[in-house]
Image (cartoon, rainbow, N blue to C red; front, side):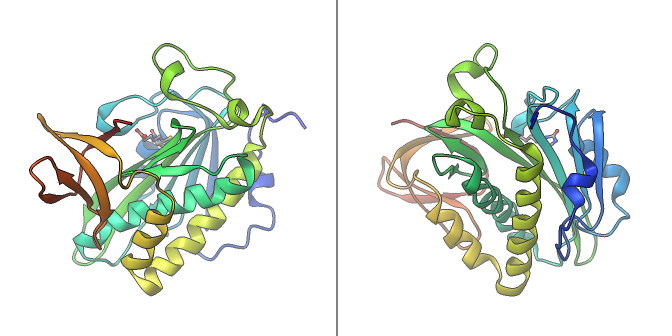
Length: 262
Ligand code: BTN
């Protein structure tokens, strides 16, 4: 099969028996950003999925751009409307990271791992990332856009990305079927979100922790203009990252960018 051919909406939807995620699936050839486009669909039922074959303004965290070349990556967003207090929103983003690595397990020779808050790594390089945006907060229901980018069939990366990014094709030595991965992603998001609704944040934090290799390692966390260096210890029940600083204090962070120092 030619894995570079445009994404087939009918193949994605065929026998996809999910209860919430994928209730509606829209596939675009090229759009600006699946996260930005989702803003036109706020009135739809939660679980709607937008997928693009390429993005002209793919967004990463911290206002960075996300390389969104045609035919080689997965660029997917879904809309969630959880009835959850504000402290449960970070665990929902972590839930999506857990669903993503579980979805990729069958497609990657080496099991992908997570770096806080939501980078997907293989061999220390970035295979994918999540951009979660909280858009509206009504009385008790929030609107969350969960955007997921996965490098699937890239043969190489330009410029600085060549040192830091990887793709399934580069790691496996063979191209992968984006449609099959998207189906797995939607199915795992559906399952993990349902179990979050039933069981809450703690199981998510546990599953996330099982899929990281960063605990015990020296990290540098930057946010705003400040940097903290120390040893990553654990996530607390709100999904905040614990760092044991050089002053021997364990401090928990709810946001920031982490660099692994070893
Ligand atoms: C990161 O910086 O690691 C997050 C990258 C998130 C990229 C995805 S691709 C689909 C969705 N649409 C976007 O514009 N960004 C996210």
